[in-house]
Amino acid sequence: MALIKCPRCELNYMPDTEKYCTVCKREMRGEEEREDIELCSECGEHPVVPGEELCAFCLKEIHRQERAESDDEALAAEDVAGLDMASGMNEIAISIDQDIPSAEFKEIDRELSMDDEDEEEDELEEEDGEDEEDEEDV
Image 1 (cartoon, rainbow, N blue to C red):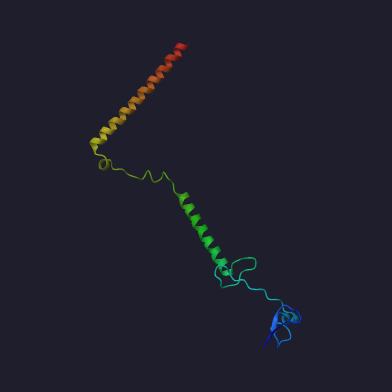
Image 2: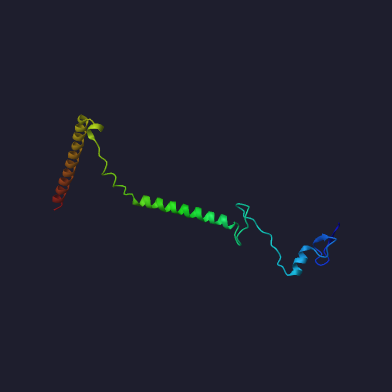
């Protein structure tokens, strides 16, 4: 059994027992030429969707994952938008006696009130100084 070139197309080899190669036989019967089937680059099992590199199953899976990710992002954005940053601050109750002993608290309060008095005196002095300058200009 030797191989010879097809007398019709002179491209393909065929057994010497046949008259024409399989490609020429298919053309003579009117069948369309089979294209090589490309397999999915992701799974390697199923044929690709025309115009794509992936099969229908892998495309569906990718779209499902993208929807799930976008849904997760949307939920996270809603959670952040729903939070009022200052709303929780009013609810915190501070126990002064436990955190700061009362003796220290009174001392701190006294020092802070002295600072307030000093600031008020400075403001009054500045206002008096401005009033005196206004009187001198007249």
